[in-house]
Amino acid sequence: MNTKLLKCFQIVYEEKSINRAAGRLYITPQGLSRNIRQLEEELDVQLFQRTARGMEPTESGHFLYEKSGRIIRELEEIENGLRQLKRRRERLRIGCANGVLNLLPLTMILAFGGLYPEITLEWREYPNDQVKEKLMNSEIEYGFVIGNWEEEAVQSRRVCGCQLCLLVYEGHPLYEEEQVSLGCLKGERLLLMNEDFRLYHDVTGMCAARGFVPDIAAKTADGAGLYRLCSQKVGLAVVPEFFRDEFRMEGVRAIPFEEHFLWEVYGVCRRETAGYENIRLFDRYLKEQAGL
Image (cartoon, rainbow, N blue to C red; front, top):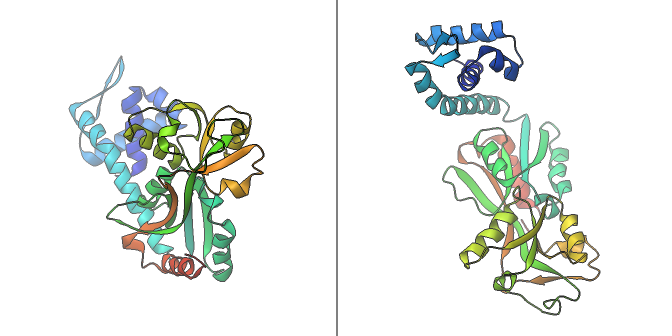
């Protein structure tokens, strides 16, 4: 059994039609029919009844569909893990959560590739949860995530961090304050990074814990957008402290929270792969950098 046959089965099950499923899979109906027959022969069961109404799942078909998602994930994890093991000295794939590179210099990551040119260095940005998912699925070897990840199978340590601040535009009642509390946000129009960013979930969660739902005026995937909208007096923005250095701050102040909320970057890898040479070298390199 392989993941290709199982995925074909899943689509036929969902569409109840060979033709429609073939369209989704971009293969011919004849080729898809052969794949389904091959899977039935391998399992020695009938998965579908071919009727005038289409492909009706049998009891075995229903059972397999319920299990197939988990089976596919496990097979893919095995395949990715074997490839990762084979190339543990040749390649290092790094996933960075959205926003991490504002605080953790990309040049520092790339410099590792210069020190070890025999290791192919690859990096990409993803939403925070996708970095975690890709690490657990062996699609990357190392990740930088926002917030500590308390997972038994993961080795995690703090790399860097900063405070959270509130961007306030000139003329707003909070503009002259030296500190603000989270409670001040109740009833205010807020500007936040969107759901792909850990910060959105942290802020909405902290507000909920204090008994109110924030009034979100706008969400964006662009930090510059938060600054621009705040300067246009659309609302107040919750941002990491590094915004002070990123933008001109004309007519806008970044005021720290008195609760001392932190925006922290953690380096993570799976415990079972921490001894791989590429990961071990990268982890040692990080520890040698100033302040890490």
